[in-house]
Amino acid sequence: MVPERFLTPTGTEVSRTESEKVLSFGLGKRRCLGEVIGRWEIFLFLTTLLQQLHFSLRPGEPVDITPQYGLTMKYKKCEAFQIQQRFAMKSSP
Ligand code: HEM
Image (cartoon, rainbow, N blue to C red):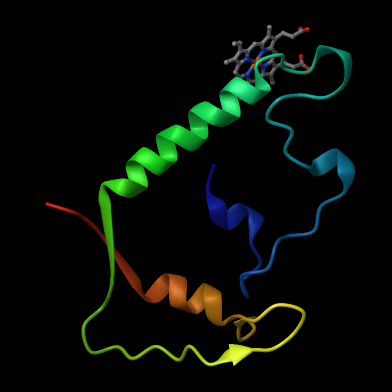
């Protein structure tokens, strides 16, 4: 699945009605019995993959990390999405 499918152009989550939500493991009486194992497998697969990658900023592109204060401190609105796009993802040697 393409992650952009779940994001608005500003990087917030697309709002969906209950019937439109993605239910990877099904719902109700016949829902997946292996959901916990499945989720752990996905977690281990992704963490193993992430451990092999190296994240860095593109040279010469400054990043504004001024926080926006609220209940928790976070990046300025929409900033996180733009920062994501500025990151270059490279495989480590
Ligand atoms: C990412 C991994 C997995 C996904 C996405 C997945 C997804 C699903 C889905 C969509 C169903 C059908 C639910 C329905 O009919 O409403 C299902 C059923 C089932 N899954 Fe999985 N599954 C995964 C991994 C596993 C694993 C690892 C096991 C066992 C160790 C497992 C065991 C089962 C069983 C036994 C059913 C039948 C449940 C029933 O009909 O009562 N699944 N799964």
